[in-house]
Length: 290
Image 1 (cartoon, rainbow, N blue to C red):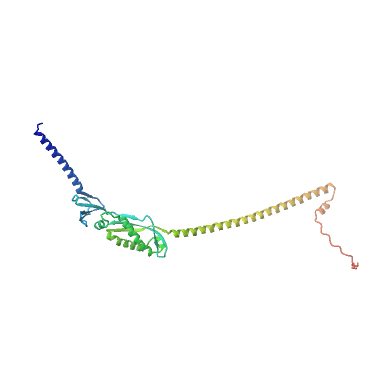
Image 2: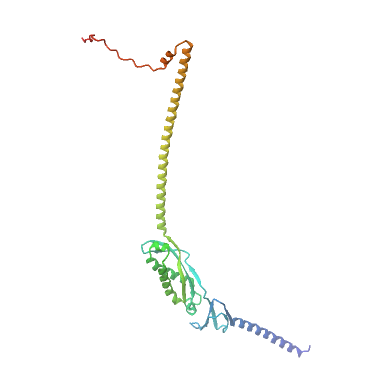
């Protein structure tokens, strides 16, 4: 290779590197210039320095943007849920303190307004929904009794609650489709009072049970005493009968041994009458006292 050919080779090599860099930059620009909007999404296009979105990509597909000049925020427009995981204290119409937790199913219905209200995704939408959910639930609880809240809100009152929530969600570009209570419980003070009443009732039941057992024990002792007296009486009666039978056999054997007549034996077995009192003879002078 001559000295004249060397600059040509270096020039071609430099052009090749420049071409490769240009191709890479072109690919990067193409990548950054294309955005894909999927089903259930809406793209909000904003330009640098602009306060409001320039356009909205509402139809799913592939779109082109100006690199480094336009930014596209993809917003999920599908139905989402927000739940109060920790119950909060509310006061019912009858001044009962309840622990309530609510839920809501919501979606984005105005992407431009939603993009502005959330500061292009910097503010959490769920936190705002939960905050407004608690706010509207306060008004609902104040118009309902504790029993009604525990059994479930009537359809008309639930519709009013949903309308009140949508009124507050409208400036944020959101709308709630469904709403409801996921937990209803009494306050700690009410639960403690109920527990005390239950403990007192259980204690009274235990006392009644002990008293009943004591009464049953006394009845059992009385029954056992009665049965013992009856057994002893029967045993004594039986022993007397056995003794009498033995004496009869003994008298019979004695009469037979010594040749006594049967009348003698009957006379022995016959109970003797009690001796009568002595009667003074007629005409006898009664003893005179000195």
